[in-house]
Length: 64
Image (tube, rainbow, N blue to C red; front, top):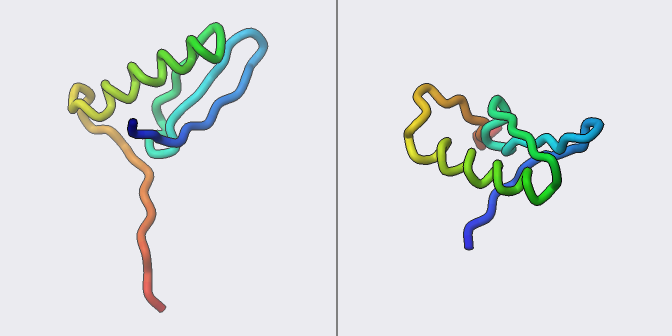
């Protein structure tokens, strides 16, 4: 099973979260389990090519 890192928090009654690689794409759920379901759906959308112009975060190694 593949894994990916995400950030999440509870804001009043909603659980909010986004993927480290795609910080512009936030989703929410009523519970943590519901948030996980929405994150899985969002991941499918982000990696399928269904959403054009996706901005990503990456790291670049630099030599001195």
